[in-house]
Image (cartoon, rainbow, N blue to C red; front, side, top):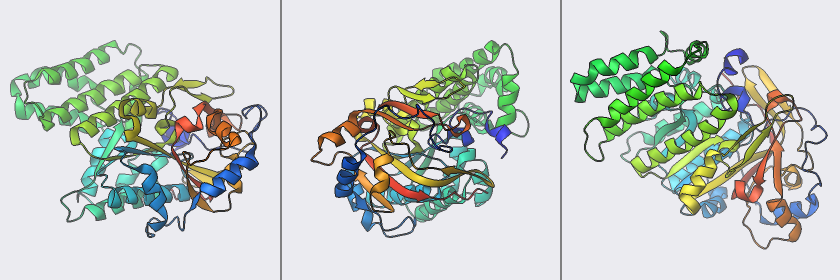
Length: 443
């Protein structure tokens, strides 16, 4: 998929959301002021790290036993990746997902993916149509890789012949394909045909154009100068479904109402400025995930970029030459709601290269001295887990954990872009660190 099309959708979709992919050597001013005493942190991390035997997603899980202890009884476990497009990072997340599903009973994979795409993926992993290449190509651009396809294929194999199957749930709304509109119309046709005419008067003007291309839909709506009629229709659709008589716990009604919420969210998001819709998006993703977890009661794995999963109530993306973005991450909402029931794992890297699309790669230099990953590069393991709550904690390590955190920023904004806001101890409970990464395989 072309870069031109990628950049028309929100921060977080496509190459624009490779939040931790740095380009070149960090510019002056991109660090956090005084560098941390990296040697003391490296010694502490070496003492408490647990080396990983393999990045192969099919490898035995014995080396992940310490991670299982770190997760404990959490109901939602976030798997936050620093760069998108790193093969080893994706395969280590795949291994961790296996641990959660096979050993800890997690039964929902909530993903940084559009809800309507997620419905299609859920059908696939429950034995639906087998065109995995087509399905992966419909995902958000940063996830159109062979490594992600392997995750979906494994979920399908795991579910085969089981009663306690795993579900796939997209927490986002940024595509909202025709499936959402059809879900609402089918529900009303089955429950209250007398209101179908009223529904269609509001729903039909909102439907995506023929072909169901989400980028064409975004483009067309972006050219509309007065979006108020569209917002009126979207809210009218949601209000109509919300008022329909239904039994308490009626799952069909809950899903139809969620579909209307996705329609409203899409229209509101693309009517806002980028600064405003970034804030809006995080809150909506968190509420969407909470809605599904309450509906199902499932233990949940949340697969997304670390800028979404980290507990960061005041995250900032510094964009030299552009407008900085500032928002409360989805993870900060989930921490507030679930407390210790939310566990945040950060998958981090030292250096290497990542894929940003078909035949496109970006090199990663080692972290700048003030970035939190810098001391981890000298830990003598190719990959390891590290529980940041390990004791005892020497003074220099305490400062590393509780000083203002800084890490790589948006690749499209150059090497001076950084992400900051909060502390490492707030962002994550556990790190899964990989020394060298290679580009994921894009289709």
